[in-house]
Length: 301
Image (tube, rainbow, N blue to C red; front, top):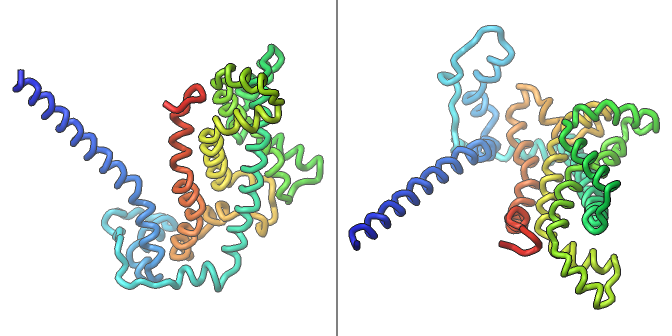
């Protein structure tokens, strides 16, 4: 009996070790591009050209070369330099302008979309009826449709209301996106009715029920959805290209997609600056993200 127990413990330890090694390998694999980008942002232009020049020249030439024989992936620079960041943050104001364009588009979209989602989801969850079920089903259909399908109607509406080449052309449609409403409604519907009945017995009105019961219980889900919305619109490319003809209004995501091979050294530094808001948001909201995923029935499991 003891031998059998010891054998089971050994199998469990072996299984845990295999799982740990697999997770560690997956983490290294996923983190490698980020670490490589940060490390290369501190390299000199000559070192970057020496390591990756063949790869980018191969993109512009008709002849084909074996990239694995010409590209040298380096995680430690031979000489640490801040010239790339100096060019991005001090010498050229275009990069910071594009960065703040991204902020002025993404922050209002995230804030107002969550406000609309909280109010709408509260209405769907608190007072369900057949008419609202039809509307909610329409939201589901819109969420399933790719954004490229609704991009043309958005363009026509923006042109009709003279909003092209303005931030409103992107912000206003994004505020009423069905994505956050759908997810938050599903979460709010799991809140026990007994909580609401107890609040009503204490004389609470709808506003107090929303702010004192629904919002606190859904805090993890709200933060999780807000993070997903922020990251989604922080990385948008199609909307600004279609709805904004003025390059001065384009966000940094569009600028990164258009960097040519001659600016590859700056691309690493710009990429690091571009990643900072999303990394900080994840580090701050990691606990809320886990809580939002594991949330069930208004009570954390």
